[in-house]
Amino acid sequence: MPTEVTLEIQRRLVDGDAAERVDALDVLTHALEFAGSDDSLSTWRQALHERTVTAQAIAAVDELVHYITNEYAKGNHYAASEICDCLDYIAQATDRLPDRTW
Image (cartoon, rainbow, N blue to C red):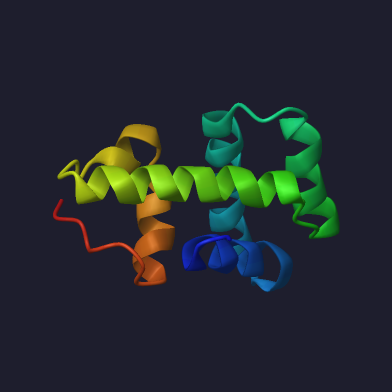
């Protein structure tokens, strides 16, 4: 079951304004790389051109969100920025991860 953050990223990819889509595409890029997904470029292009979010895209984002959430719970408050700061932005915008002290 996808997390609420994953569902928010999916919403932004499909229905978001230009700024939301760019942010969500950034997250998707890092999630696909993090998950080592097959056919990542095709998945990313579908999200960009067709506003279609595949099961592979959802699974990759969800894997990344779970990893960061678990790391944060262990006290690693920099887990997101170790991968990419874009996830901090999305997570804070949806109030699903605690605010980070910079």
